[in-house]
Amino acid sequence: MTSVAGVLFAVYELPEDGAPLWQEVQNIKVDDRGNFTVFVGSTTKEGIPAEFFAKGKTYWLGKQLLLPGEIEQPRIRLVRPPVGARLRRP
Image (tube, helix red, strand yellow):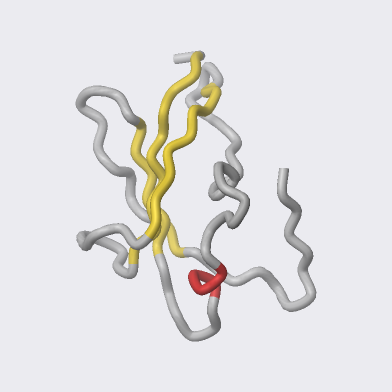
């Protein structure tokens, strides 16, 4: 598939189940291998809430291609950027 597709990104407190604490939909370009690059949180000025990167807390990022029959992919753990790291916005 080489096209533009809607993807739902959501942040959760748990690695499985539970309601999302935050979510957004982005239209992304997918290459012929199914790969894509995206800046999660770039659809709003605020981005992903900073508390999701607080020390001592663990949050999980889910993603789901918005096509018939697609389900949420296994969630990945959000990690804090290294101390002193500068994050760039697109």
